[in-house]
Image (cartoon, rainbow, N blue to C red; front, side):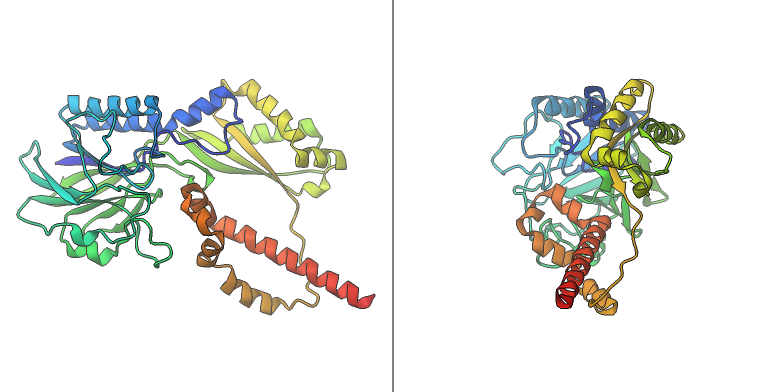
Length: 408
């Protein structure tokens, strides 16, 4: 027996912040999840898998373009035409009210509804497989759904499909929260998870697996993305991760030199980009550090975006043959050593560890955390570090101002 576990296709993703890209680059970015899905289907057919599991968030939004629906329909039909069964559920992004009909899904595809149900099939090697799952009918699903999953019976294999996250605390458990011990206690042979975009193996016995998204949607989702090919190996289901994402998000750092002018800085950056070898198209976030050594005019062009316009012009000349594009530029001066005055560094460090926590940042953000893109943004460690550093700078500035006022 062999099957594919995938999730979080996020077809029709808007790829926020990239609409300014040249059309040929934008189309390459927008089409990337569709290309990843096509490659998944190619591999499924080539390997003659018995079935494919799609564990939620097939689309990025609860309303989809006709083109996206037709694209998904075509790929699902390809699987059915090769006698590959398909089982899918909807997640918090593409949730469907119970009374709504799913448009564009072939009739023979099994779609799980809002209640946990179980489907069974017989594989090519005559294994009896039970698959249990459910779909979201609203964006937030705060109740633990695992108790609703049936106990294992006498099937050869029992698989659970669950789009959700491990329990963290009542303020953040909006997506079918569960505990690993609950999943293990069901005695299933495999748990096909969705919702978390980074591929993760939460447990080996049984395999409890996040397949991850098939294509990263922003710079916090860098690295390879794909799906799991799961095989029956001496009575145990064994997942193998297979990358299919055609685009990767990378960070490129270049140090400015005092002799740099616009052209020499661009030439060095383009040369460094060309040396990065990858079989995936790279969307690069460029950090130019040590910018304080540059001439005031060049530094001003970096800050007001004029210089990036020159860089984009050079990239446009090479876009047909290149395999990367710099979509943002961040000038970064060498970090000065902060000299504390009235502010005691020991007290600051102790306080910052208690104040600038992930939970406090989420609480402060409030309803913004209901937007998945912003929730992922605030959860990133680099964002939390930026907020902490900014707060530290403001406190130091205020401390110096108070000291100056006392001297006056």
